[in-house]
Amino acid sequence: MEITNQLNHGHAAAPLPKSTRLDFPGNFPQLINLRQLQLEVTEYEHQSILPWFDLIEACPMLSRLKMKTSLCGQFKGSLAWKAAKEPHKKLQVVEMVGFIAFSTAGDFLINLIHNTMSQSLKKIIIVPHKYRAFTFNERDYGVEARIFAKERLKVALKMAPTV
Image (spheres, helix red, strand yellow):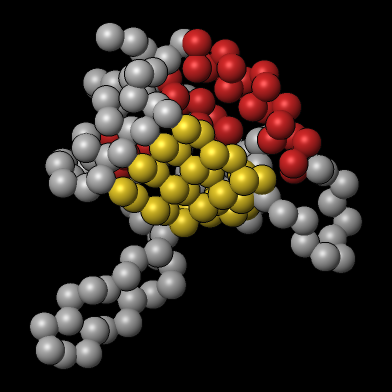
């Protein structure tokens, strides 16, 4: 997660760590004025990215979400998920950068769509994870992302809540 410190008050802003491990609270406080959110998250074997959905749920006026994801290890825990208390009514644009369809990023996006009013969602941007030079990974993330979009996203969009 990237946090920028913009509180200066005439003093030099204290540097914040590039990343931090969070223990997610049971309930996030309502962030009623937050309209745009950019998250940089990493999935580990012991920690998925799914708990970030609770933060998004706490932002009822959020209209644009950009999530940059990376994968340190494929999550090996349970993917049990709960429905949102109330569908998101303002979210218009969702951008997933570094998207890997077989990670929990795919499940995160499906759950986000299932919990967003279909009339509000205007655009979903998926930027697949890029190959790194000199790796022996035979996966084509672009092909996987296109298959994911054709098969799973179409079904999820049909099931999104309506008024």
